[in-house]
Length: 172
Image (cartoon, rainbow, N blue to C red; front, top):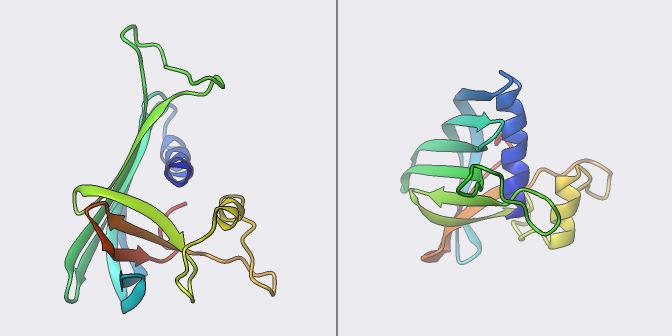
């Protein structure tokens, strides 16, 4: 959940910088590297083209999405993420026990519930919690001190053996 919040807050910052209250932007054709994994093993690695969007509002939340065009053997793959601040019946923001706004977050792949995680770019091992924290803070480095940009990966809850990943071309 934290990775979605991080991703969408960065998206929201970009979009709301457009105006004080709300913003939206379309992202044109973007070249990325796409990877398909089956049972955790790389079965396809290919350049791909995606188009996307981001939207955000100062008081309601944010969202983003990508459409990956015609990945040979798999067709079109879509990825959508959203986060919405929760309100009570009187339109007051609902706060958690720490005084932070409560929110609802959703991740979809091809319009079905999905789980998002990150994988290392060469080994495709799933990042540990510690590595994720380093990544969120811009401190995930290799042994030579160079920043590591992991792949963003998704799998559908009902199909955990099939995983779709794409490289750091994703905003955030």
